[in-house]
Structures are given as C-alpha cells and as structure tokens.
Length: 223
Image (cartoon, rainbow, N blue to C red):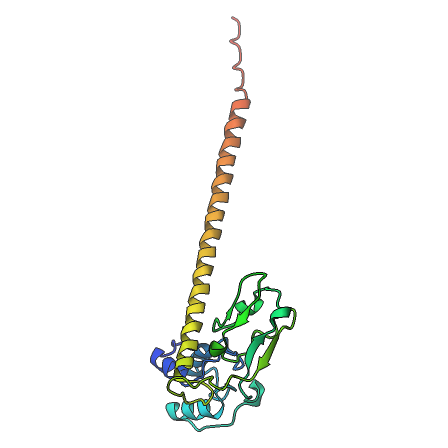
C-alpha cells in the first residue's frame, strides 16, 4: 500500500513558517523537504535552529500542537553570520558555488569567487567544501534585513525570505534540468553504441557468409 502523499497546501503553510536558510541542520536537504517530512509525520516541529522558538511557536499554532524547546540534536540557535571569501586565497574551484543552496556565490572556474551578502542566508554549507579554507563567517552589515517589510524572524526581511525560497527552487529546477539532459545524452550514447554493435555484427555475419564455400555436390555415380 502506497503512503498518502503530503497535502501540498499544508506543506506550503509549514514552509512559510521556516526561515528558508536551507542549512540542512534539520536533517533534510532544505526547508521544503523539512516541511514535507513534518506533514508526513517523519519529523517534529523543533528541528530548525535558524527558525528557533519563532518557527516552533508558529508551527505549533498552525498544527494545533504544544510548543517545545529546540531539539539540541540539531544544534543551537546561533547569531546570523554571513559567508565571506578571502579573494587572495580563492583558487576558483567552484565547490562553494555548487554547495550554496540559494545561489548567492558568483564566479567562474579558476577565477575569484565572491558572496552576494544580501542574498546569503548564513547556511554555512560552503565552509566544509572549501579546499583552501578561504571562506570565513562575518557579522551581517547594519542594513542587512532592513529593506522592505520585516519577517517573523528578526534577521531577515520578507523579501529576503521569499527570495531565498525562489532561488532555492530555481537552482533545484536548473540542476534537475541538467540531470535530465545528461540522462538523455547517456541514453543517446547507449543507443548509438548498440546500433554500432548491431551493424558490426551484421557486417561480420555477411563477411562470414561470403568466405564460406558451399559444399561441393557429389558427382553422379557411373552406371
């Protein structure tokens, strides 16, 4: 029996009560995945350190549950810190770009990368992948999170939260599209290789038939 799929309306409502840092500290790849896990009964409402008590209280009210402390297994709530790349030490490996869930790091292969500070969610996923340890965490600038209407989290504006959600979705869609394209290319190569092998087998058969002499019929016996 297949499990009942999560209600998309419920998933969306839960996702709106998560800060969209996409840090994966909840044990899920991103905020939307965590929301789906809550609806499916696979995760509790107290697994988001960046959301902290704000998210827990909001989820408790939404779902009609009792609020509870943040689960320490997922870490403690920490002050927001943004990624900063020391340009002199950057080798342009692009690993941080691949790791960033909100696409706030820009650069090209073997060229210096930089972080768009106002789009950084402080997820810290770029830190462990950097081979030269050229990424550090810095306090956000004074105007970070100020432009636009505030969100329920003091660190982020509504615009930043929604932008992080959109950029995460766009990156996932882009990567999924690239994977589909790679899959098509792999299938085309496989079909090409199979066709080539079939043609080669037919040619070998043809040559074999040409080189094999038919048996000489027996001569008629003399009377």
